[in-house]
Image 1 (tube, rainbow, N blue to C red):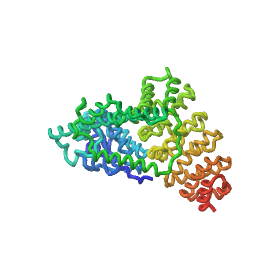
Image 2 (cartoon, one colour):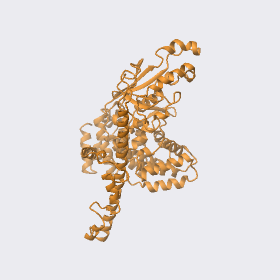
Image 3 (tube, rainbow, N blue to C red):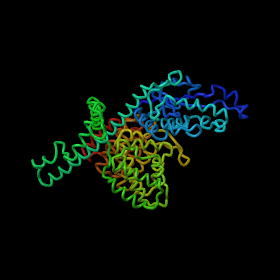
Image 4 (cartoon, rainbow, N blue to C red):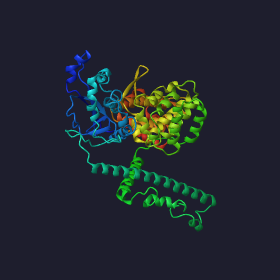
Length: 549
């Protein structure tokens, strides 16, 4: 499991004590300060101003050291996931142009980050600071100081790793530096365009190669020598060749100079990273996932069922899902309103069960994508997905199956599977819940269901949960709960495949929690009574028997 990192809230008084002295006279009541906050995590201080999100060394802004530091908690979110998340905020809801002194400021950003990292908000007295104070003449005089907090930031509102605040005022930018920054930005955009062109060309090549292979299989041959006259060695037609050359030599409309193209070293490093990731996936405990979902069919059925029933914003959300699933766009295509649309589909009783089934099955296909984590992290406030999962026993069987399929497929990628195990809590229907509790409830419910399809997905979910090497006190409790369900499941005369999955899970749990072997001894059945299904099951039973007398 990832090591934890401390999350600390830096609290500054923008008035340097003036509010405490003058608020009674100006407003007729005492106010301790006008607060600016920043979040310190992974050794950097992160805050939001009129120029967007900025990161710097802790305590090095123009404000100096904070008035106080408050520990929010510990986060287990990987730094890479945090960085991707903040970059997403910097390009959307927390661009510099979105900054509002009263409604969308530094404290709003700090609240967002703390909720994301720890599931805990910043102190209420900061968020509840009376807006009427900032509307007074005194409050207006503080505006320029607040605006100056982002003065050294990137004018595009993008996330930075270095700050221009190093104890003094904002550093003047020389014309030469501005020109260099412009050239770098132009090169970045051109590089991005080039990568997009390369991706399109590669897709064309792959499609042509697939067509050629299909034709060769159909004709019973790998192709004739005469075919080579129409295509070059890459399988591209002559008509496509100039486009590819233009994208490489810079003579085309884009005019990308060769020196601005990615270097051979960079390309090799990217390839090495990709291969390393593939190797890591290959060597891990392989999850059980379901790839039979046809996203095109599910989307077509969904669109037909909701035709004429969606608002304009909801129609946009459906189009975004189409772009993500079928057009190869990244998770960034799913806008801020997408989960609002999902929530309405889940809650609206006037919509048929089929609507939710097809939506969930489409999401089950999306769950296989490596950037689905960006969508999951958008759900940190409303918990649309996990609240629906928490109510699995209240849904029709068809919806239960589709929901379980979605959650099972999230184990395809490590970041998404770790999201399922988050321990940050919230209140739902007057009960405290969390991602890991909802995930456990879904797994146990499906495992013990009478429906064969639900039982099949349930065994896969339990297998996948157990294979996540998480050793925390919370997971100890989960291990016990699922193990009790497994013992009950063993009495249902499971198939060999189901017995293998569940016995493998139990073998993991007896290693994680010392309580599990004791419960097996007290409750039974002892795994030895299930010997004989297959050799691989017998091996797992032998492993468990070493822990259970």
